[in-house]
Length: 189
Image 1 (tube, rainbow, N blue to C red):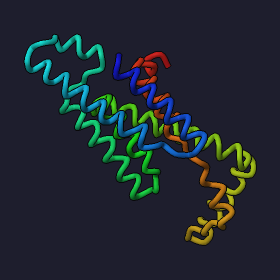
Image 2 (cartoon, rainbow, N blue to C red):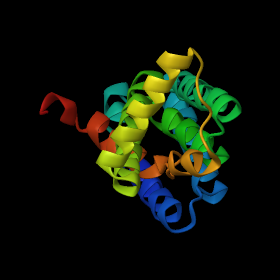
Image 3 (cartoon, rainbow, N blue to C red):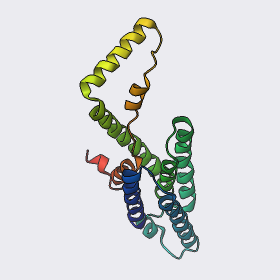
Image 4 (tube, rainbow, N blue to C red):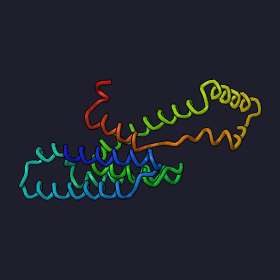
């Protein structure tokens, strides 16, 4: 539970800075990563020395040092590929790495996938709001017709390309995803 509270607190701060300044800062993510690794290292020592029952540690959010490293590497690695291929922000990479370090690989990947789904839905809503549903549908239909007619994809104008790039806020999506994963809200949906 302590890891969840820490993660929700850090994600709340990241949401605020993401909304206000379109950035997820290192001073939010690095302490979260270090806290996850430190907490799980201490937990591993306590379990190895049989000083504490592992079940008690799991209730506090202990996933194990190895799982914490794997979560950090897998979630951070996937977003690092997205950073290179799709120009995702560097703060988002570290945010997902922090999420993986605190949740472990399985729940980290689940939360990351929920983050992508929620972020994509939010981006689509913003796109429809900015462009308008009718205008977006007619432009899409026109593009498909011309592509089928000519056999090649007609390039978009710079204005059309700018409209199709709404800001994507991953921190709020990650916060909602962690709530879904940690409190098993998907079972209720």
